[in-house]
Length: 21
Image (cartoon, rainbow, N blue to C red):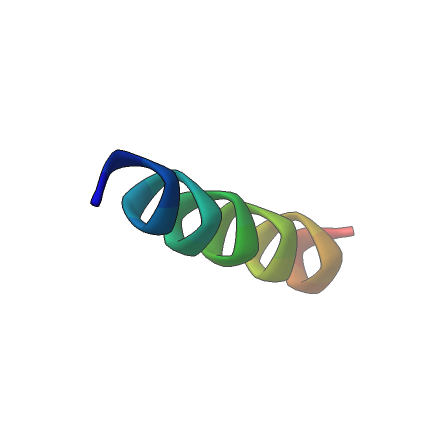
């Protein structure tokens, strides 16, 4: 569960960073 949540957060963060960048 933790790993999945972390992966989701990482993906969300990466998407946000890419969009912001």
